[in-house]
Image (cartoon, rainbow, N blue to C red):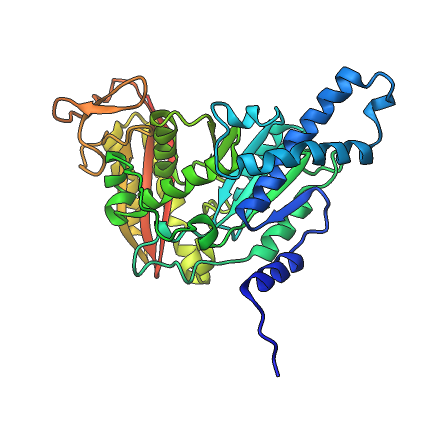
Length: 401
């Protein structure tokens, strides 16, 4: 007879099975566990301040075990206080002063994700904390998309992060702690679908938003929630999802979220294919066909170097995609990388507008493409295409001369 296992016990068992062997990596699954892990930062900072003020009689501020005990006691009081969200303006700094960065992922980690983690580690330093979130967010998937099929590889992801986090001096990430927050949907959305939702605005209506009209609302919902829960100094995002990056920056600006957004360049395979968790869907033939996207970007860059304007850059890239076997083009667009105003006259980005210093778009005269002699740049050449059943995106920032 099989003894039933409660969901709580199953979750605890799964967490134990996935517990990383490196003692500087902490895997947490609930909001309370995350709050407790982050509270250690506060405790460590308080212990350091106590050492500096009253530690003249303690050589080196006491041994590591004593310091850890004092840090845990000092931090435990902050766990409940911070379980609900931001501690206030500058929350990452205010949470005791220990530098903290967050990298938000949906798992199935690859070297592009590790680049984000490495940059986060560089920013927080050897005494800081990096939080990597792993959550396949149902709110950003529409009906019929690949929510159920999206790869979930938590054990391998944790092992990869643990391997990357060797001790300083061993060519690993020189960071004090790495927290992996891997919540279930009911942890992220304890009351079911949120009753208060974010409107991502006009940028979310074009390009990716035209194909996936509810996608960016779901993205911003989870990003803002995770910012509240992790309270970082820095949040790192890859440039591959350029439209997402623009929307997150706009949200942080418009809602006065106390965090600095750090973009990280696209990581590519040796043959030029942009790394993506969805590349796992491609068979060998489709993998070869997918290289048309990086070739199209190269054609756009070459056209710009030859003096082409935005429309000419788009035409050069589109010709490569349209001639490529097995590639169904969704769009090739040249837009402003912050406002997503159309720069090529193709009608794919937002209509012509004045891009103000803050990056906001206001109605203006009808769009007029820039004259070829007028310097514009960098501009964003953004591509989307379907190869087999897999939809891929790629982009490049290009200077028009």
